[in-house]
Length: 331
Image (cartoon, rainbow, N blue to C red; front, side, top):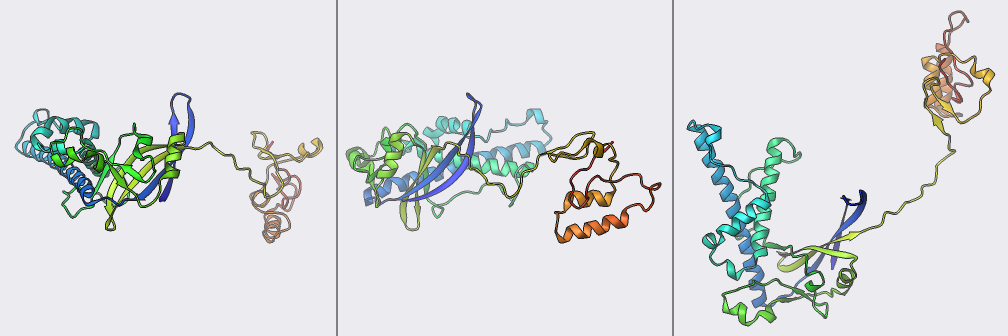
């Protein structure tokens, strides 16, 4: 059982507190019988059919609008454009599936929903790239899939949770069609709905049963010559504060208006009254170098070269050693 980890932050609107979540993908190898392997294969084909139907419908709508616009039809009189979201395309598929796919009773609805959702995601990526909202590699208009494409289908039934696992934690539930017409599915329903796994699912089942993990979706795919199930689970993690040890001495600084920089080192009032504008060289040396370092001595020599020679020409100076940067103020 292989796990991958992805961290993200979700904002809970009810409490207005940021809750960190971890999304884990638990991959489980499957060992279905020949009769059981036929059902996931048909599900993947149905998902591919719904994907191609969605892409073809959107492409046809774009072509019709383009022909009408080239023939001089006003924008207000053009054919109504389609919404490319899954919330719009899924009800449209449900209203036309009896005509487009009369055999849909022998396939679970999750297969068609998976294909429509994948197509809408591909269309969204294309739209964002055309509008300039998506950066990176160029994204073209989605192309049609064929039987040589990757076989994959996603189930989003989040109400099952523990119902995804058998009692012995060695089988994964396969969602079957509600009202199948195929007698092979009707007669062998109990034998087809549990897929054997090559690894135990005891730890995953315990996490889900205790409520620590929540199953978001289950994806069954044919990868590397075998079938596998990928559980996408969500886990709420309490934020942990990691204390960090300071590297050196802690000095508090207050950047005000009257003083350019005020450190926590006490300075007599008699000294602060004589403070004037610093020179550029002394200011750089006091803020950017450390005492007793090579850069410190270079800054001291540079400050001495730029320091005024006579008191009448001196319009600004620094208080304290510029090499140590104890105090700098502005009157």
